[in-house]
Image (cartoon, rainbow, N blue to C red; front, side):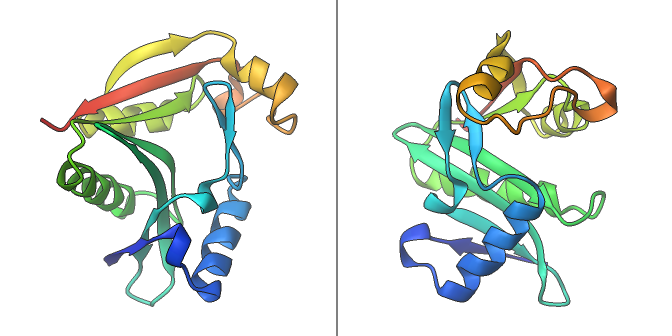
Length: 164
């Protein structure tokens, strides 16, 4: 597997189409978090390219001064190291850009992601009760009421990983 950097401003049509299709399949062309609606295609990304040349994963991110937000992380399949490779690559990129922390937002139902991120050095930092309910009402009405494992989808959790 190779990890390639994609710059939203200098992207080719073919790369944009492939990344857009990958994110669309995962309902992630628009991301509501912390009261804002973002479009991952407007931001840089890391692409995991599988041995077959296909897209194995996509991680989009936002660098803002001393921190780097992981906006989306999706893989074609679990348990193959793709997510770990993408997180490692964005951590290296963020550190090289002078960031001292990496952070992300996930939802209360996403217990698999909570396990994944904590095992990769992230710590629970902030709970935003009702944030998903608010986003559903004002930003992204297609957010379902129930998430993974039948858990009501209501809250956002911020996780942080120090890079220093």
